[in-house]
Length: 320
Length: 320
Image 1: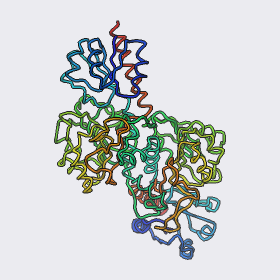
Image 2 (image 1 turned 135 degrees about the vertical axis):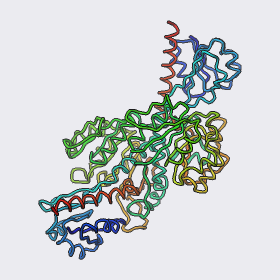
Image 3 (image 1 turned 45 degrees about the vertical axis):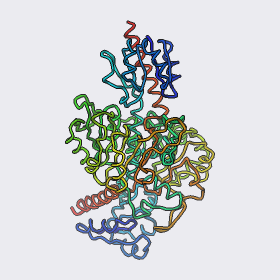
């Protein structure tokens, strides 16, 4: 069994060491097109965050693509040869669900502002002030997408007394957590999406970026949100129209946003890069984080374990 | 039925209006000793955050004390006449549990720092950096106290895959949430506390302040904590020794602290007041908030409702 790892992450070397015992492994850099070209023809398994037409032409032995990311939008499904399976390794969903609940509660209770002011001796909220904050108990959470991440979010949200609704590409396959009731609609049904958006006190975007979801949160749909509702994006920035979101936040037409995914990324590690063409940093009704919601130390370990498991399981079946 | 409200909170007037229909209600200011003295002899029910010997001497008709706070340490139990029931209204426990989970996750993933740096274009954490953060999935949470707040924390923690242990004054009466297994020890058992402290990745202080709990987190006990463990105090500051906590945080001997309760409070609304004699504001491994963990708008409403319910239930029984 021959495995090609197209390296993107610092743990690629560790992954190679783990798989080496059972397979022949080649590790190449993501930007080394010549090395990828050379390694592809003999690869039974490709571990890569992207797969395109050029790769497909040379991948003549390919049987399995393992995408290490939750979002597989750079795996071009049209180009994946017949008979080749695509799986996403998973691993970050628990970490992302923690991020979603924590940031939603932090927004509701002005946590950053409360901390900053108390450090200066100002008691702005609570029984020593006239301002009260909000909570999530009993509130309504709409989920755009209901895969592994949505499942983990819903499980935690239920324990907070939060009611959930979801839209997903695969409503019939959706499995709510045990004991949790969720109204699940179709992500292809614009009226179902609009209804969910109007109903929600908070919306979590946790779907794939695709032709169906790209720019689905445009000015019209953002205008359907409650004026107090919070939009949390842990999927891909392209699902939400940059300027429309900025305008809605600046005008206070929605309650706030939690953004972990961005419109502009650094082109290399360590590079300074403001994450948008709009000045989100000037707003105080946003939480801004550097695409790290699923990137905890244990989540990286789980991802590694699950890729190794997927490779070994496939290898043992196909050696049969 | 005659009710005396010793006013502390802005909603006292609304509470009076709500009870007025069924009872004769007197509302007096907390600092108006003469008015309290005058109203006490005829009061069947006192709604007050404190009760002392002087009040007891005059409260000759008293049957019920309703404390609007979760912490009843200012109700002097020794002075409560025989046959008088003391209840805490409840209401804030759901809000406090939200605060505990959100701040714990925020600490684990350096949320404040991640936001501040990304606003300046710095991608410090995640797949574009070499730093990874942490999560709570699978971690160990020790609870000091297991009343209503502990119950709500445990329910939510379980959904995050967090394992819980607790010590409480009433281990036999403790009721874990359905489906949640919690090892529950006695708050009077120093060895049980030490064992819990050593075991925990995070510790939530959610007990009454009493002779048993005052200063229980001294330098010795803080030194038992893991170097990465986080201490969350939503009870009363007096449970944790101020200087010992500050020293442990400054030296990095513990992972961090989330502090909602304080050593110095403003003496009146709007007054600036640094919350401690130690300079916690100079530390970056703390989250500091102004005693607002249970003070959300819905929690204030729940508290009001539950006091009204307690008064009406008592009044209807005693009218026969």
